[in-house]
Image (cartoon, rainbow, N blue to C red; front, side, top):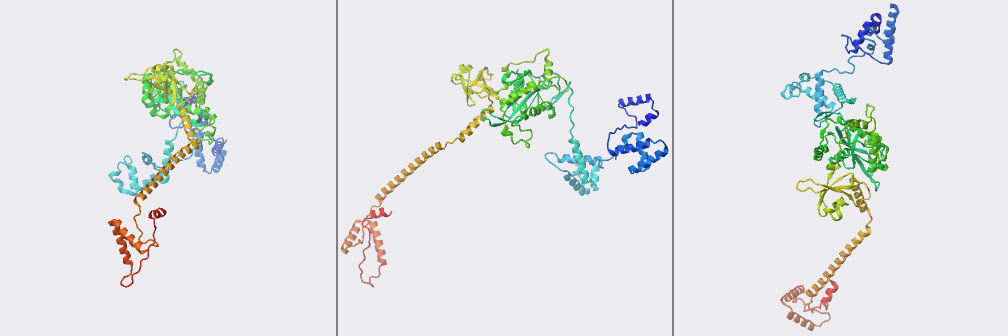
Length: 638
């Protein structure tokens, strides 16, 4: 209803009826109510022009105003009159209405659905089909023509018979239309809308087993863990160890932090158990933590809600839930853990970002000076987190109401105190260690340390079972060894004998051991090694000389035994013919048959080389020059 119609005849009762109709949410049949707030120059120009026409004092002025409006807007006078009629009928918002189909694509619904189904099919089971491949596929199908009537295409075009007919006729959407349809579909699919949050009272949590309504404190605890965005150093060497993992336990009703576990080991079932142990037990901290408030949250929950990670489905956690009597539930979807996830973001932004070694959540944007500026140890970080949880987070206002979180938690226990449990019953949360033998003076060897306790004096020579907290290995709990299926009994607490620190985590101990091993490898042991090397070289040299002497003596012995000269010089130098003849006779008489054959063969060879005695006169043989002592000759020339 326009202003003009109201001013020209609507009475107060009619106006009241209109307001009642609007408040009840009903609309007058055949009429839509539009409201447009726009300060653009084009819109204001139209408003001014139409207003000048409506405010005209007579018909002549009105005709002139319509003519001026048609000239200014570049439209006919008939169009201007239609605009005036629509403004009087619908309202001034009609001046801002453009084309009804602006931004839309001209395509039938069955083609739209077919393109979307092709995109979904192409991005299933690891495939990643793009927009152009879909368009090419449509062209390929259209090229088949009448072949698309075959049975093998029935399943593909089930529910899309009109698409099949268009493809047979060679009709299909253009390349641009395919892109527009799929992009519009993806934009609508990936559009995220922020959830306004659950109401303060009657909050619900959706689990795989159904919906849980949050009604009171210690009813539903949520557990989750993450890796903190800060590098830590060891206490002794001040060198970077790595980033710590934190496991948090939060009360869903009040939002209070009930407990946590901090360590370098990746979060597993034992880390979850240790965080639960810390949350259930009453917490007492010394003056070194500088707390202004006390950590009052404790007790046993009715439900534990977690995500679907394997550590929350472990046998260890099943045993704990059976012993303590709480029910385990898994989130129906990841967004159900948004409350506890927000705490991790607060820890990074409100605590860790102030200290050196902060890495940030992005690996690509990690500060280059993070390792150089790291300064916090695990113990220091724990103290800062405890102070933040106790003095700040638990005492902060609960969202949307003027009530602190810790006050909201205590409101459920005005008439009764939270259920407390003995610490020994929670030893099931601690890691079980292999059996160890008790040695003299009530001591056991574990983790390369010696642990002692007066409680073990009566168990010397027997075996005990150990349980410990990874966060502090300076203290170990001793139990009797389970025999014949019977559970072990608590013996007592034993302390590390040679550890000077009050607290030390298992990760720190392992880092220190590794550091000492690496430093041992880098120590200059050249003198020791060279001394060992010289000993081996001396032994090898001595052995070689002894082998050489043995071979030399054996050779000499062999030469003396086998090379005794029995050769008689046939033609000694300066010897007379008579001496030569005599020596030949002696040689024949004293040599054996082999020697005789050898001499004969030599003589034959010498005879063959001589000239024919018939042609030449008998020549006296020239005596051969030889050696007098054959053994001496062999010794000098071997």
